[in-house]
Image (cartoon, rainbow, N blue to C red; front, side, top):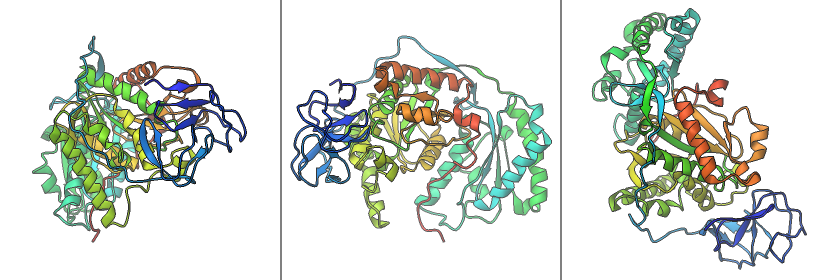
Length: 509
């Protein structure tokens, strides 16, 4: 159903037992359309009871259970952490019951991108200095700094820049098993991302993540746009920097041949993220992004939803949209993996939301997840992938990842994302070279306060009566603009140097 909204409150579903305050409501104030008064101060973005809720009863938002009352709650009372808690969220899963394909777009859209030999299309044309191990990280940065000081790229105007990709792993780990395979997929995936026109791989030489293994089984790139070396074999830091500069010049000449040319919107691969969420996330920016996701899928493009701990409690909405029972079952297997993973590491799946999320009005992980899933729109779920796994299908897909944003985005880029969209209600500052990141503010206050970091304000869905469809179109057009070379706020600010965060699983030895 369409939400019911007045100037001060919002009711999302006829079955809901809570409404959302759209303004700060003082204790004793009349609540629009209700013959009741606010029982306490209710901050903007927070919930209040639409009618009495008995202790132990389910609390409903979005027409779904978001938790259970820990005490009797009066009509008009503030509903939050003091009287609402996480509870058993198990659902009767349905598989492939709501997977009607979206209609194809009436018109085919395009963007100006970099066409790669493997058929992918980049939205940027960077050179990456990829490292196999943390021990090579400083030298990779020394090479990039030396290239900048020497003005190396002045002769190659079609190259956007040099990006050192450094991390904290690659050794002190088992050479077998989950953790190794995740890092291997991540490094291989970054080397093949279409936003890189060329790659220089630098290792130390004695690490667990051996350079010969990466350049052999992984087949990182074609030889023309790829070079590699180890510090030990090259003769130490100074010689490696000198050799690195020479190699950069060679591959920069290759990358410089690429120029932007028209590409169909079907070549878009958009990783969708939310971070610093608030009570508005699930009613403004996330569903608007969901509308844009459907537009991309209708063009034949690909959108990626991730952050498995932050769909927990809403996964049943995705299994229904799976194109086959097998894909739905694969998603549930990842949920079960996470339940086991957190339990054996002394954690729990309901440790979300964060303190900032709670200040913004979110109370339980079930509530947060229902809002996060709104980013996925209505398209059928065409595939489920492990972290950093190469995508083999187009359409709306899911990639398993932690809810930690830099790590989740790292996996999406390794899987092939050439654009990232990021919704935030509290305010997130980050960027993810080589892939541009479009920031979507969920509310007017954030956009006014941190406008230098936000690309689009979705708060006017509430304050200005803008429809989700119109905002979704605005987001979609911004994606096409950025894909064609338009800069984002995070790019203008220079973000992207520290946000490569591979998922580390397993013992550090």
